[in-house]
Image (tube, rainbow, N blue to C red; front, top):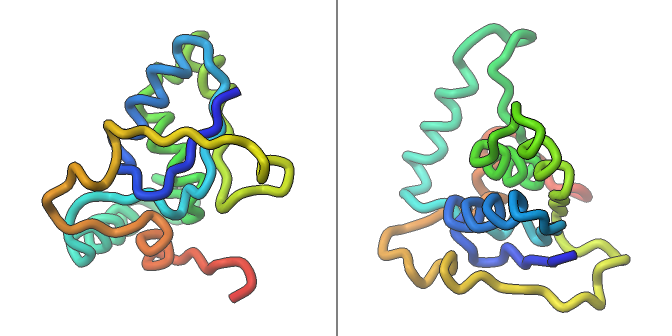
Length: 141
């Protein structure tokens, strides 16, 4: 099992790397999902997500996850062939968490240098801040 720390990782780049590794048969756990980043100005990213929420019928979708762990997992799902057996199996091997759960506190966490935020030259917003703008409230708030 591979444990990846999503702190300061660009969401899209991390998702492509993780999707490829899942298809190769690895079991991957992602921690600190709320600390992953999305490139772009805060106002434009929030406006884009709020516009996606207005489309459609309230009970008929499209559905947009409001929790950071589900948001990250959905991003990775979009890069898998999810309707084919290999994509379904790959998606089952993925676990995503907010923060670090107690059972994984002692694990060594892997960083993905090809997806680090230092590669960005534009402004960015964390996934946690982004989903707070569309309705997620942190546990304990």
